Length: 184
Image (cartoon, rainbow, N blue to C red; front, top):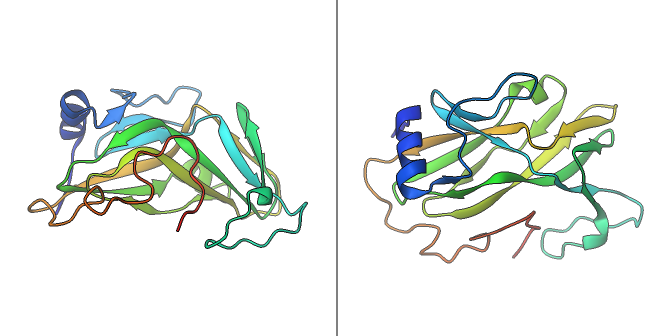
């Protein structure tokens, strides 16, 4: 399994619409970086956030998720309360090839501030906007900047196409747009 280069990512973005919109070169000046890097793609966080709150004393249950456990915000900067959590999504829409597994990693700029993005895979033939899980591990409020980098995706190409892809399984998060909540 090989990590794919900027040349491969660019070619797939152009020919297969693997990433839309696609930023051909890394943007860094005055922003948390995003766009194509040497062996990955730094995705941007959109301006839609679901911030967890304890106002209604909800219990988080992935089998019966209560929508009143968070507040919705559409904003250029999201403040995540101390020791709290938010959901967001990427600006980009991804179409993963059948012979590729993608790994999402948090950016070090945020990690050095105690803001952690969940490590998650994008399975072969998954398609959609990626829901991003963001934890503020600090005792201080944390600011997230919409339209700037939030995570990096690494593209790993298998030695052959998989036998069963995410699309074949009719995965529950297929074609998601917006922030997707937990589903059974």
